[in-house]
Image (cartoon, rainbow, N blue to C red; front, side):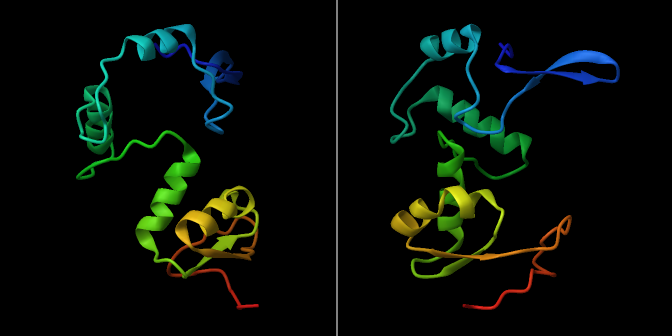
Length: 139
């Protein structure tokens, strides 16, 4: 089932197939994946009656050692869901200027979450942490 679109890469002298997960719009399902989707047992996920989604969420929670997991159909929806879970309407979100959310998802952040994003730049190769945030001055 793991026959999915990807890139051929050279690893340790051997050609291997790497799954391309850069974006939910780049990844393409293989025929085997399409068949699995078409034959999947389905139900109403709003009422938590979709056994396939329920199993996926349970497995994700298990793999990541979390109490629960939530399936969302796109990376953008996942980012927005996480931001909305940690902020309130009208708050500001400080983003790295080169970051994906700032450059590609600010419209949904403003329209749906009621957030306003401000860009800051961290020095190259610096990992941004809560203990050592990048310097930020409100414009």
